[in-house]
Image (cartoon, rainbow, N blue to C red; front, top):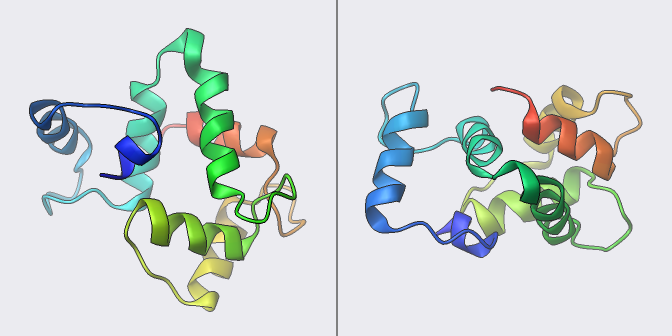
Length: 117
């Protein structure tokens, strides 16, 4: 489960409840935007920054302190069991890169994760 790989340990019942709670399109699956919303809702306030930083570091495959399109592809492939083309990754990056520099730093990532979907 992607959430367990991010250090969260929900039970099967909790996972089913989370899916029902955030599955806004009724597919029975959590898409990436729904996943981001779920993570932002489920992380407790005192642990929020620490856990988001740990998630960011897992997504930052090359360890450069930024998430770029390749890191995003890696994160989705590894943690969300999703595949996407380079073009799709660039499109997603353009949507989530607020300053347009082609990379997401930790502050941008935290803001992205905490915004409602």
